[in-house]
Each structure stands twice: as C-alpha cells, then as structure tokens.
Length: 262
Length: 229
Ligand code: HEM
Ligand code: FES
Image (cartoon, rainbow over all chains, first blue to last red; front, side, top):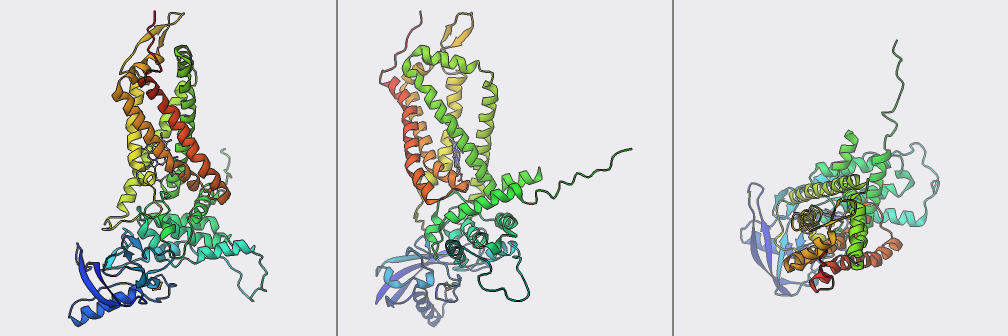
C-alpha cells in the first residue's frame, strides 16, 4: 500500500483558464491500474462533496483507445507500449508526486479536466473514404494472395487504437503517425489499392484542416505509441503522398479535343 | 498551378521541398568546402580559383538558384514553425523527451543563426564590405584578392570566432537534417538507415572540420598575410 501526491489539471468547459490541484491519494495497492487509483481519488472526492475528476476510459483493457492522460510529461506514462488503463501503480515510487495533464493540442479541444474531444481523428479517418470491395457471394478463402510479411505489416498498422498519444506527445501536435497507420493498414494490402493514392491525399488534407501540426521527424510519437507503431510508417505515407501528388487523376484535365476555328 | 500550390503548402509537400532544397544546399556546401581547401596551396591557387569562378558564365544562374533554394527553405521553415506552434496552444507543465535530440528541437534556432551567418558571410567575403585589398592582373583587369581578404578577416579573433561558432551550428543543423531528409523523402529501411547512421556523422564531422580549419589556421598563424609587391 502506497501514498502519492497527485497534481491534476482541473478546468471546466466554461472556464477559460484551468489550474493544477494537488490531492493526496492513500492506501493504493501496487496491483491497481492508474485509472483505478483515480477511481479511489474520485470516490473520496464524492464522499467529501467535491466534484470528481473527469477522465476518459472505456474498455480498460488497452484496446479501445478512450483513455489517455499525460503522466509526468509522457502520454500513457513512461512504460513502453501501454495505455493508461494498462499502467499499474507498481511502476510509481511510493510517496512521490505524479503530475497528470490532458492531451494538449489545438485539434483536441478540452471538454473538462482531463477529457478532450478527439473527434478530429474520426473526421480524418472518415475523409479517407470507402474501400471498393466485391459484394455478392463470399469469396473463397485465400482467393487474394497476400505475402505473410505484408499481412503482418498491415496488421501492425491496424493495431492503432486512435488514442491520440502521438499527437499529444509531439511538440508540433502532429497527427502523422495516426494518419500513417490508418493509410498503411490499407495501402499494404491488395484490397486497399483502388483508392490508395486519393486516400493519402484526402487524409493528409483533413489532418491539415483540423489544425494538427506538421511532422519534424522527432519520432517521439513512436516512443509514446501504446501499440509501438514505428515511425517508418510515416515514411510509407510520405511516399504515397508524393506519388499521389504526381500521379493522382493525371489524365482528368487533359482532354485535348478542341473544335477547329473556321 | 492550384495543384502545385496545394502540394507546396501541404504538411508533407512543405517538408519535401525543405528536404530537397536543404539537400541541394548541402551538396553546394561540400563543393564549397573542397574549393576552400585551395587556400592551403597558397595565395595564387585560391585567387585564380576565385577568378575562374567569378568569370564563369554560370555564376549568376548559380547564385540565383542558391538564393531561390535558400529562400524557399527559410520561408517554409518559418511557416511550418508558426503552424506547429499554433497546433499546441497550451504548453505542458511537465515536458519529457524520449527520443528527441538536441539538434532536432533547435532546428529553427540553428537555422536562424545560419541565416544571419550567411548574410554576414556574403557581405564580408563576397561583396567585400568589410575589408578589400586588390591585386592587379595582366590585362589591367582588377582581380579581387580573396586570399588576403580571408586572411585579414580571420586575423581578427572576433571574426574568426564568429565563423567557427556558426560553422559548428551548421554541423548541428545537419545532425538532424541528414537523417530527417531521407525520412521526409520516404526512405526508411533498416539496411539503408544503418548506412546513413555511419555516413551522416562522417560527412558532418569532415565537412565541419574542413570549414573550421581555415579560420583556425589563420588565427594560429599558419596562413600568413603576403604583401603584394
Ligand atoms: C547551411 C544551410 C542549410 C542547410 C544545408 C539546411 C538543410 C536542411 C535539411 C536537409 C533539412 C531537413 C529537411 C527535412 O526534415 O526533411 C532542414 C530542416 C530545417 N531547416 Fe535547414 N538548412 C540550412 C539552412 C537553414 C536556415 C537558414 C533556416 C532558417 C530558419 C533553416 C531552418 C530549418 C528548419 C526549421 C528545419 C526543420 C523543419 C522541420 O522539420 O520542421 N535551415 N534543413
Ligand atoms: S480504456 Fe480502452 S484503451 Fe484504455
């Protein structure tokens, strides 16, 4: 059982300015998750007739991407490859101070305390559009051949849970690792080819319009990613974007049929 | 034209143009460093090399290209920097870097120092606003005595020091740049990166040493100021 002093960012939607409040949390078991520690704090705040701390969470098993706190300066804390809900109190030395901040980005407006609105990520995803697929009777298994390593690489990209830690950790609040994961999971598969180039153009455009920053190749995103998605996927996105900029719809405006003047 | 504009202002397009312009400036730096080494062969060698350059029919085309590349690089750098600041309006109270290197987080500052240095350097040794000694050549033509300008300049410790510091800052800028430019252009393969990891530091160290050797050599008296008869 351990005690901690936690500094938590408190801010109501109606307030322009937030502030840190320090709380003492006591008798925390090392087997509690970080969110359970906050549950303990909230129980206490409620019993003291105070307003509990608002934070996002849902599955609490590291797969939904809802949780996300900046813990001592690192989104999801300093443990490698974990979400906040899968971070355990045994990783924190007893009687120390823990500072908890919300994800900070122009594209993530604050809702309350530690909760931010990440629907900009959903809009980026939607801007990618549809994937052309066969309808009708189900195709035979293995009708479309995919090399094992390609399937694995696409799967690595597809493990992105859209939590936004890459944005939160980036000095530029760039969403490039998110966009790279979401374009690559399709770009690496045969099924993703028909709209591949246009998809990279429209998703990058939407990222820009949502107010995310640009990538300066710092690679803090891959270090913070709870799914350990490497920054090499950003190089893949850069290639596709470059290719798309040069070749997408290249014949569209090039009909040279002109009637001859009399 | 609209498509080109969209590309240039897009997050990836801007970086691609920065990477290409930076790479071309880097190639120029390599050539410039090699040319400068002629100073160690003496006054004659450097001056006739400078004379050859200044009378090259390509001189102005080359200067215009370099200026264009630099302006593109700087304008996009400032634009990206401002956008990136705007994307994080509220700063964190606690900041912790994981893989972020010093060179990477100071790119805009190293860039600003380099920019100031380039202006000073052109005023000093290209336009000769700071010191000029001229030497007659056969055809009665004036030939700028580049060697004496350089040596006279670097005899002043404050000028030599400013050059040395600026050149180290260029090395710092390149430390992040060389790795970064390949990522921006889409090259990020294990085999390939192992090569860059060895090659990039070697290029940076050699380039910086070659540049710095000149002010240091003058400062420590290895390159004498020869008075023309
Ligand atoms: C000696 C001249 C210079 C060379 C060789 C050079 C080279 C480069 C290269 C190769 C990059 C990497 C681009 C990429 O990430 O893909 C870069 C980035 C950068 N350069 Fe320069 N540069 C020079 C001068 C300048 C100047 C004068 C500035 C003025 C502000 C500047 C500001 C920047 C910034 C801010 C970045 C990082 C952009 C980002 O990733 O967000 N550079 N430079
Ligand atoms: S609560 Fe679902 S990933 Fe953490």
